[in-house]
Each structure stands twice: as structure tokens, then as C-alpha cells.
Length: 210
Image (cartoon, rainbow, N blue to C red; front, side, top):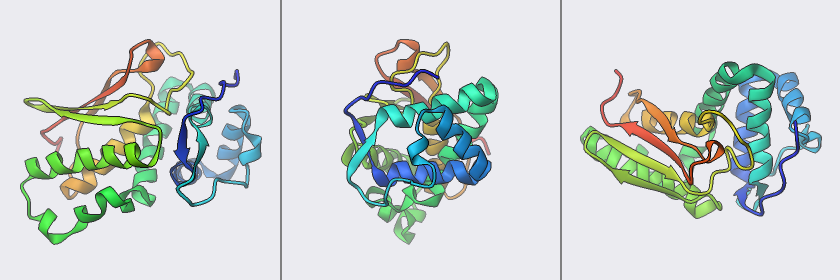
């Protein structure tokens, strides 16, 4: 796999650490080490980023891990692992970030579903906008929301035939499940910078699957 040139855009160490630990959960230590080697990031083996909010983890390295997943397991297998990685990263720690702090409160839990989504999705976007160089926005439409990532760490520097930011889709799915009190939602990536679009865009349907 060709190394991706550094972007000068950064995630906080803690988000990178959560995503790497989530991948270890999903595929085991040996599987993760193989991915880090393939991504030209052997220095991260047994040396994960610290659990702090310093912006020091380059988007290029985050994207390289996602690209290595797809290269090692193929588009379909890589997609499944990345979705699970995103869900695990949210469940293992992202839900405790400041912007989502009030979402577990009783006052929030009694709100109607429409209000939970209206508050919860922008709160998720704010986490990344406030703590990293990833800029995220949310726009409400009739039957769906459009969640847009304007500077995307998931696919930075990569070129693919189809949208490939599955870790972001998994994060959104897990976030929506938590915000809604256990419901599953469809999240489809409709635009992707790796395909040639100007942004990465996710359609989040308001009606839960079940």
C-alpha cells in the first residue's frame, strides 16, 4: 500500500486511540498489528496514541488504517470490519464526550424521537468540529438528515470507486442507537471525497429500521 502524504490536519489522540482499540476489539491483536504494518504505521504497534485531546494524529494515518482494512479483506470484508470498528469506538468512549453529555439524562430520554434526533445528530457533529480538524455539519430534510464531513479523515488521500467511509457510518449508527434509546437507523454515504466529490455526505433516514 502506498503511504499517504501527511495532511497537516489532525484528530485528537483520544479519538485515534479509541478507534485503534475498537479495531483491536473487532479483529484481535494480531489482526490489528497486520493492519498497522500494511498501513506503514508499525510504530503504533503496542504504542497507541495517549488518551488526551492534543491534536496530534494526522488524518493521513487514520485514512491509511481504513485503506489497509479494505486492501487486506477486500471491499466487502473491510466494510464490515470498519462499520463494527465505528460502532465499537462510539460505544467504548465517544459517547462520553462533552457535546453528548446530556443525552443520557432522564429529561432527554422522555423527548419524542424527532427531538432526540434533532438534538443528538448536531451534538455528534460538534464533537468532531470542536475537538479535531474534521468539520461536520447537519442539515434537516423532510424524511432524512444530511450529515456532511467537509474535511474527512476516513478517506483522506485515497481514491476509490465507491464511497468508503464506513467507520464514520458505523459511528453514526451507534450514536443514533444510543441517542434514540436502542433503535437502528439506515445511514447511507451518498458522496465521498475519495470518489471525487467535494465532501463526504451521509443520508440519515428519520424512520428507524425497527
